[in-house]
Amino acid sequence: MREKIDIFGKECWEYFKGNEVNEIIERKDGFIHISPGPKLYFSDYKNWSKREKKAMKFVKGRVIDIGCGVGRHSVYLQSRGFEIMGADNSPLAIKICKLRGLRKARVMDMEDISKLRLNSFDTVILLGNNFGLLESFDRAKNLLKQLHKITPSNGIIITESFNHYDMRGGFHTKYRKMNIGIGRMPGQWRIRIRFDKFIGPWYDYLIVSKNEMNDILKDTGWKVQKFIDSDSSSYIAIIKKIYTFENKNQKDILKNFAKGYKSMNKIKKAENPNSKK
Image (tube, rainbow, N blue to C red; front, side):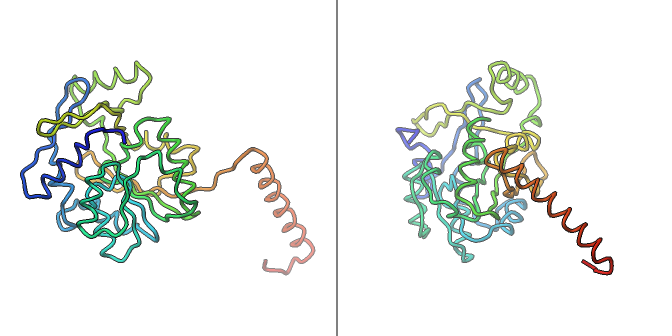
């Protein structure tokens, strides 16, 4: 666990008990955002955004919901007949998932992805801006390669982020420039959560534009199939798996095979000019 105090779980538990909860997100440079927090995390399908509803149409097969929180997407997909596992690093959030009827839910850090069985999930969900959980450029590439291993050849990732460049003004521009100056991605936020008397530790949260997401995906075995836009800066990406070569020899062998196959077809056509194939 990254957090000794499960602040996210505590705020969700209070809301689950019927209490009013405000979630405060503090950025390292002093920027403060008051989030809808648990009110959003517990929202029913009818209250979801249009982009989330559209994204659900791409879900297939066995599903893992990474950063599932209290099970907003997991519980819905289970009700639709999907075999789904919710995963989150908050013990209290997972407890709530189970109380809400989610059959498969486990406490899991992002680093535990590598421990999952090969080809065990067809769809990976990282919604609720959870592309941010990948934290940084290098860590994102590494984790995407791990997700490549636990999905079959037709596996997909459904994830969400927003274009931080739409956050204009000197405050945000200065923060992006500072990040670039110290070798971080422009939208790599250093944040912490405040709830009631509790203050969480600082951690990295990665916010990316569409172009930045495409750059991260290069050489990971994944490629954006479709972007689902919204009326705001937020967007959802449907990411499909592509074939990758383990080494240059494999690539050369396949290339030579393709050339040989093409040559054989030319010879066959020359020998059988009347053939349609």
